[in-house]
Image (cartoon, rainbow, N blue to C red; front, side):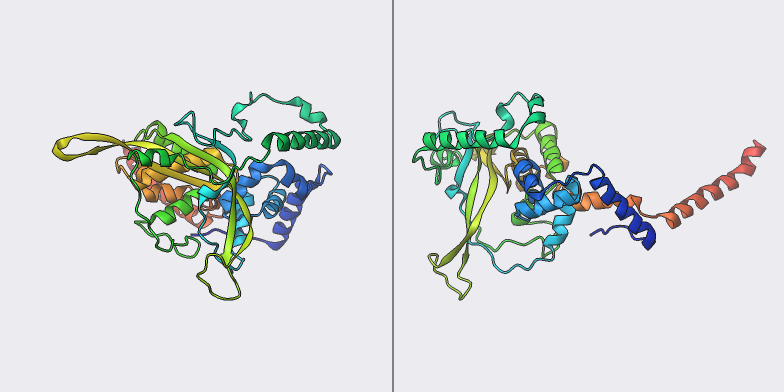
Length: 373
């Protein structure tokens, strides 16, 4: 289902929109789109992920338009996305070829290529930095110049692409089964309504564009109580993936005849979840299965939570709501959930008056009997 804004008297609506614009401009400050792109990376990544549209500029415009309200920004960006033609499909991307900017493993201390901490708030004290009040553009530019010079010198010729996957360690030991390739064309949830039971391609699409808070909340529920799924992060990667399309001039199956169209930043997580299997003669054996999460930008908590929910839905335990695909997939979509709750603000005069009349009639019918008592 879908929801649209409330409609009413044209004059009242026009004044409401004018008041909304006034609230955005009354401080007599114009927030430049470039400033949003340059200083609100986390919010832009979240909006792009939930909108399933990768464009930092469009996300920044949506954020400016909606005064930083992420729910409204996603609504606006998804609405715009629905008007865009889909001219090409990119070639399949192998995340093993990611140009890594951050890479950590909670499963192994020493991994080939090393732990790469990258940019993260994980290692900060999370204390208010009041020095930012007096931060100047000149100081910021000088700091960036010095850092880039030092970073290039330290980086040298280090190649951070095509780093081996941590999961391959366990596969070599036979502790994680090799998955059979499923080369069926994935279903597109934006073109086909979701039906149950769903396919994994549908589930992953909905999870990756689900509301960050909702995905995190349900992932936490599965981790803490409902099934107590406790994974170990095998590998978390943040980096860039190159995208290619087939030659648009003519159909070709040659993988060399492709066009590079740009890159996207993503966060990818492969979680290891212990699983007990029963062998012959009732013997039980411990192995590991994988939960997978990936989303636009650097959104690590969401990607980890997604990997938890992916496992819950792939190997469900129906005693718990976090294994119910209808419960999970229908309730994490930000536009649907926000729209359904917001529709309560729309006029319900007729239905409420009907209920009110019913209550009055019932009480009136009871009154004579109550007087006799």
